[in-house]
Image (cartoon, rainbow, N blue to C red; front, side, top):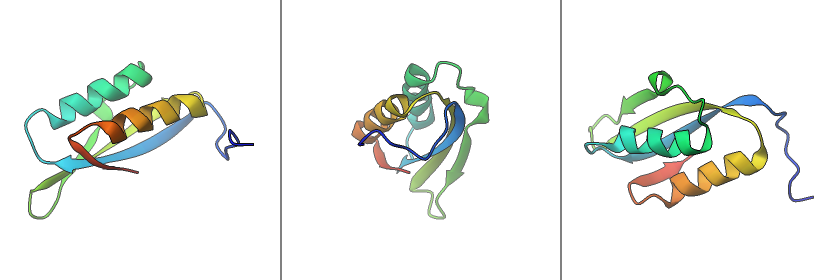
Length: 87
């Protein structure tokens, strides 16, 4: 089955989102995450700049309730023009 997953829901699921460092990047990412996980606490976002300062990595741990929820969140983040990589 295509919907099979090794995850058991609900679960805490960390997403790492990377993009170029720019004003508003973290806020935009948090807004996207909140659309899919309304109980997400923005205060828990971990931010790390690359050694050159050119890129910013955000780790957002969401309380995932289903695979479709995670898939939709991943799709929206991946499709955002400011986002380079979502892991």
